[in-house]
Length: 251
Picture 1 (cartoon, helix red, strand yellow):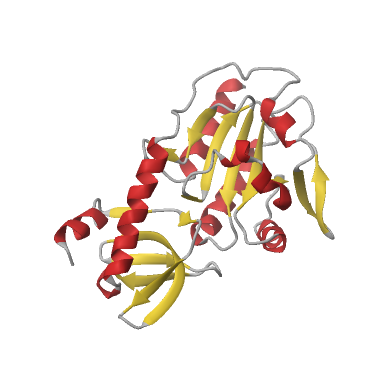
Picture 2 (tube, rainbow, N blue to C red):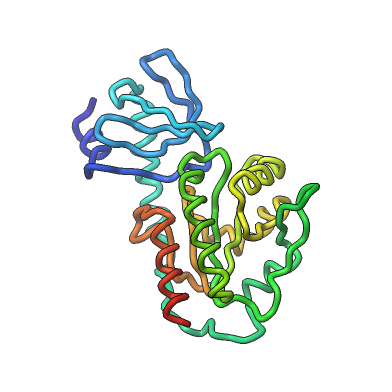
């Protein structure tokens, strides 16, 4: 393997990335074909997330040169896309009563799981000061590991701080997969209706190049915390913790 490429891949002791939006077909030991997402790498072991949510560990040396190049290009693409994102806003202009750009934008487009599918949901008024936009999917292994943490956070914080709301934006393949994912993980928050996701570029613009991605925005859409920091994936837990501190400080 090219030494420069290997050095790039092994930068740092542990490098974990999110599930990427498009699956890649990997060639293992020159013959075996596996369709999965690049999830991360530790030492000489590459972690791949399959569509069923399972994770496969593959020796780096067993991958084809094209696969190694794919990982390198994906990492470079992530850095370039995130570097172009605006820095988080520190504005306090979101302290409003009864008006919210984000809530108005989402009105009529939110749903929650019901007995026979999805039912409509209204954000209510007064509107939340913060929205935690959660980009995730049922086929994503890292998402399955993080979502229970976000559910626990929500269940602990919501009774004491009603000035925030989590909004799930699905990367699932269809509405039924989205519904199953929300039910299986007991998501207590609303989601953008599956058919409306593509028609909401104002919300999709917050999504990073990989999932799970959690972005905290204020009522006017200013970014307060993001899963991507300075062009690097910091994980979804970092903005969740930042939101917790903001909520506690505002009390």
